[in-house]
Length: 149
Image (cartoon, rainbow, N blue to C red; front, side, top):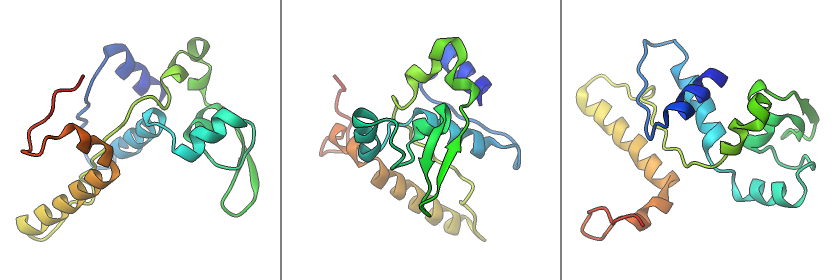
């Protein structure tokens, strides 16, 4: 994970297209990268600003810096910090939670025909539109992209 984030951050990539044979861990690695980069939920942002040590909600940041978290069953668990939280005096952690991530996995796009696969792909893309509805403000009514400021 640390090497993956290091490689991407040093090269300044805007988008990543990762292909590997099935079972090589690409979905797991990209999901971890997504968890690292994507902004926290509003609930987590509020908790991190007001009382960062209170383990009421598990936030993405907690997974990397460690600390006590409250599990859904009410049990409190201590998480160890990951190496990435300490590398270069926290250089990578300054990027944690700062970038929206659109993550499309084709893992579930299966079917017995091309039509079935296209339907599943449409559902996956539709779900992405719902998850990232905040991006619609950048679309014009005629379907063309607005200029970003």
